[in-house]
Structures are given as C-alpha cells and as structure tokens.
Amino acid sequence: MRDKIAAPAGMLAELTHRCPLGCPYCSNPIELEKAAGELDTATWKRVLSEAAAAGVLHVHLSGGEPCVRRDIVELTAHCAEAGLYSNLITSGVGLTRDLFEALVAAGLDHIQLSIQDAEATSADRIAGYEGAFARKREVAAWTTAAGLPLTVNAVMHRANVSRAGRMVELAVLLGARRIEVAHTQYYGWAMVNRAALMPSREETETAVAEVEALRKKHEGRIVIDHVVPDYHARFPKACMNGWGRRTLNVTPSGRILPCHAAAMIPGLEFWSVMEHSLAEAWYDSPAFNIFRGTEWMKEPCRSCDRREIDFGGCRCQALALTGDARNADPICHLSPDHAIAQEIAAQQAPDVAPDYVYRRMKTKA
Ligand code: SF4
Ligand code: SF4
Image (tube, rainbow, N blue to C red; front, side, top):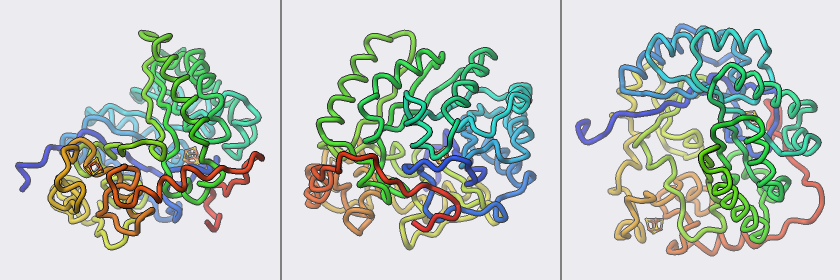
C-alpha cells in the first residue's frame, strides 16, 4: 500500500487557533482549540523534523495568528535547520517590527498576508478589528523592504466582491509577487455566515471577469491565483488536489488531518502526533486512506471521466449539503443533489450591511 502513495509535499502547521481578528469566513473549525491544549515548542520541533524526514518541502506556519505563539521565532529557525521552506501565513496583527526582524534573521522564507478589502473601513469591519488594514500595509512594506517574497490572500464575498479588481491593484501596489483571490468556500464559519457572505451570480461573474482582465494587464509583474466561486460553477474544484495526495494539516493540539476542515466529518479517526509519527499517519491512518484514490466513490463519480481530475470535489461540502461525505460534491451539475447548490446560489441576500457572526474563541456559532 505504502509504495502506491506519494510522499506529502506540504504541511499546514496550525500553531494556534488564537487570533485577534474575527473574519466571518475563517477556515478554522467552529470548535476552536484552546491555548491550554496547544502543542509545546519541543513537540512542534519534533513534528517539523518528522515532516522534513517524510518528504515535506513547504511548511505553512499558520493559525489562527501564528505570531501570538511566543516560540514563533524558534519554530521558524527550526524549519530552516530542517531544510524546510517556511511560509508565515499572518493577519499582520500581532507582528511587531522587532518580531518581524527576528523572523527574517531566523530564516523565514516567505510571508502570506491576508487583506479583507481595498478600503480601510470595510476591511476593518470584515476583520472585526479596527486598525487592521493600516497594520497590514505596514507589514507588507517591511516584507518587500527586507526582500522577502510576499503573497497577498484576498477572500471574496458579498461585502468586497465589487472591489475584486481594486484588491488586485492593491496587491500590486504593496509589492506582492503573488495574490490568491479565493472566493469563499462555505464550511466552518463561512457556513454559519453563508447568507451574509454569498454574492449574487452577477456580482460573481463581474468579479471573475475583472480579475481575469487584470491577469493579462499585470502579466510578468504579479502571479494571480484565482480560486473561482464554486456555487456558480458546473464542476467542483479538486479539493486539496485530492484527499491525502499532496498535503497534510496538523492542528494546534496535534491532530493530523488530510485537510483543515476534515474534522467536521463524523466517524473519521484522526491520529495524533503524540501517538504516531507524521509518516505513520500519512500512509496508514484510516482518516487519510478513507477517501484516497477513487475506490471509495459512489455514482456518478465512480464511472465519471473526471474522477481523477477533481476527485469528486470537496468531501466536507458533500457532507454539509447532502449529509453524506461519500456523495459527489453537489456543486457538480452531474450530482443528483445539484439542485441544493443551485437553490442556495440563487438566494438573493438583502441589500444591507451584512450582520456577521464573528469568529471568536467565545462565540457560540
Ligand atoms: S481568517 Fe481571519 S480570523 Fe481566521 S485566522 Fe485568518 S485572520 Fe484570523
Ligand atoms: S460526477 Fe464526480 S467525478 Fe464527475 S465531474 Fe462530478 S464530482 Fe467530478
């Protein structure tokens, strides 16, 4: 079995779920893990070494906000020692100038900075944190001045979709080499806030066209990765590039997951770094093997020509919309449940400022 499975290339290290921001589309689980349950420094260092030994090349130091960890510099230095390419995924809030310089000195390779909008007032409202937008601009300036590659993350939804193009232009202005324009994926906190976040088909199509036009305009200057909105699509995305094919995720308390949202699927058995090595979990754990390949598929995926292109779409979305994680992702027009996705996509949200359930440790979602 092991010889048929490629080694993992990337690892998302969710160092903590603590975060000063409260983005209503946050991909962290609804049940946020508390600080008391987080892995200690020595364990994270062991996990990073195990990742390198298992073949991982890129580590995304993420959260929550990874800079709230007091050992973030030590962990970054350990990535460098282990030969791992380190990418800090940060909100920018919590990153001081001194900490930034210490991270660069420790060998940090890359910064990925989220922006919530191209306008400060709206951006801060979406983040649920006043002053966040200004702080992000500052962090972007430090990053480019230090010669570190910068990627901007921009999650699109109803409150900012009309400024999709301006967010790309902002990323260019900030000196980013890459921008990920990702339309909201509806699970976790985004599912709770779906009615407030979902843009109309017209808004979505305008934004997609605008971003594609900017791709041509800025060719050679910035790379635009565009995750298109799946609720308005005919085929689903190849979620995680296929379950257990390229990347793994370690949660703050050390659970090893095939994707950051997988914990929502009931009945899956997740191994912990306290009991198993990363390699053992990657090759042998039930949670990684259950949806690997195509054997697990039901019709219409089982006999579909695209089964090794999109792997049946997103398991978490199949569960959330149909109640069964083994079903075809209902975004697919071939799915017998496609009408569910169409009906949701057609719902027009009222034209008022959206009322969010912010992602906070104490929020009851
Ligand atoms: S999406 Fe927002 S709330 Fe969630 S971890 Fe990132 S910055 Fe924090
Ligand atoms: S039927 Fe399944 S494999 Fe085929 S396109 Fe739809 S989701 Fe993908």
